[in-house]
Length: 44
View 1: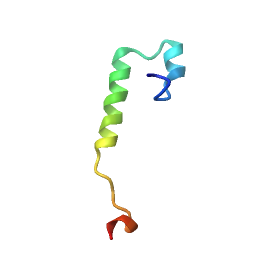
View 2: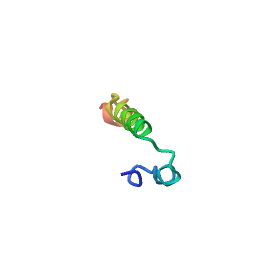
View 3: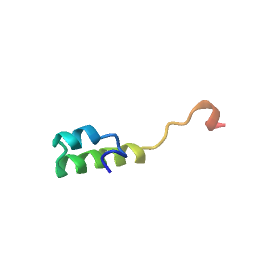
View 4: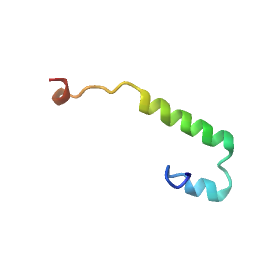
């Protein structure tokens, strides 16, 4: 899972705790759930 999200280096270094994983996943989910800002092409 860490590799899929680009966190492999942190995982191998042992700096990716369970709390850190949860925080990163929560932040990623919030970013993905944010309303998209329409571009001029998609607003038409």
